[in-house]
Image 1: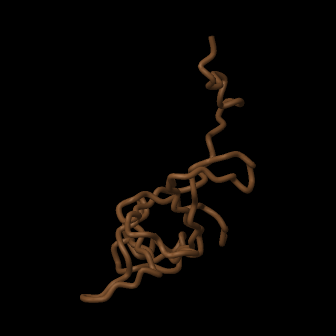
Image 2 (image 1 turned 90 degrees about the vertical axis):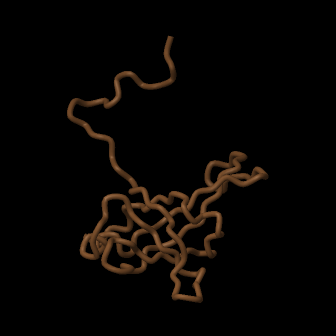
Length: 126
């Protein structure tokens, strides 16, 4: 009896799954000693630890995926879902330890601090 998982995957020998995104964590908003700016979020990307390594991610799309209370029809799949997405973009580096500044279409809510985001590996600048 099949468990729903394709046992022959990957289909061809030597074929690897394609990596579509890197994981990141929202660490907070851009801030000074007293004021913070919720329109700019700080994101720590997994495996990035220096300012030079952030250069690759400049301009990449960021997706904050969260679960809402009410279901809504997905525009693409036309199915009812509780999942929602806030899209953003990596703007520049923040400091020298690998953090990046990202701006989203709507400001991220405070509950997003500490949550994971997907840093998509597109659009490509290569």
